[in-house]
Length: 74
Image (cartoon, helix red, strand yellow):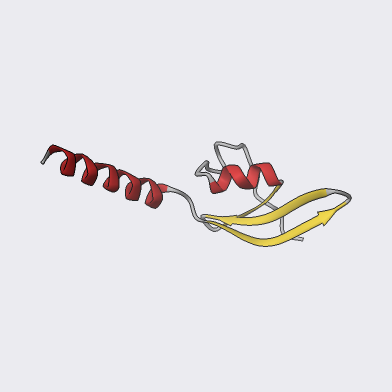
């Protein structure tokens, strides 16, 4: 009985973690001069990020935690 309760608790925690994570949408990608950059949309705000920052965002970190500044419209 205790193992089924523990199993349910861990499943609920995983769902909670997934729901709390920010959705990251890649809206544009660029590869120029050996440098990758992506324009991403997170919570309605656009950012230009490199490959490392993109992986951090997809891993659950927020733009504020990464000190990202919103992209300016051209």
